[in-house]
Length: 209
Picture 1 (cartoon, rainbow, N blue to C red):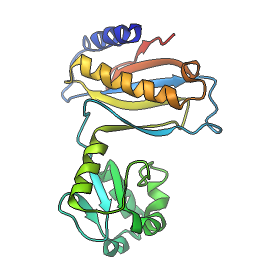
Picture 2: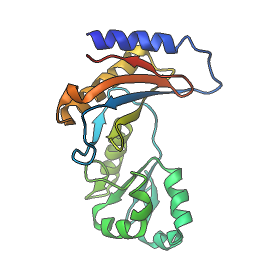
Picture 3: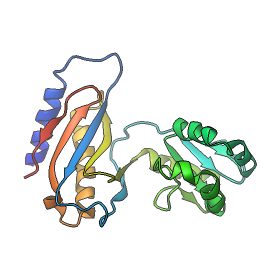
Picture 4: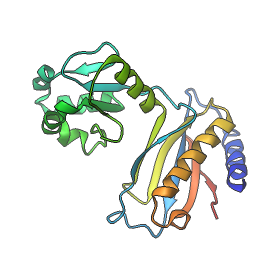
């Protein structure tokens, strides 16, 4: 496929840049066109074949669970200060919640979790039965998924790590790109181009025409 060849070339170019003292993230940037953000909401979770990183996950549960960092109803009063909620939101990548607690979570944490895009979501994050098996399965699913959320006409998604093989990064990009196309009203016509970059590099453009 032409796009895969272009991605391979782009990654080869990015790898020629001087190394950094840390492992860089590979970002995928999808630039949209002829797309009205007000009319069309894009907010999807895509399962990727190659895990990018272990996400830090916290759970709002009725009872503490050893498989996940838990915030119980009794802990909520600790977070009456907005600063404390912000600290909590900054510490974790993802939040899940027991369904029965969702109204209380929305009341106590919604004003910070909502704008940060970290509110537990029915798509991936609400537990009916918070038993060990369900929590482990949900954590695995979250760690294997990428969220695509269009807040502006350029969508930036962490898609891999520098040490991953090119083929694995390309596979992740292809899966995410194809899933996004399905959620765009005009599919490919809504995509201007895509770019990939390392944390500290300039973006390398990839044509999708």
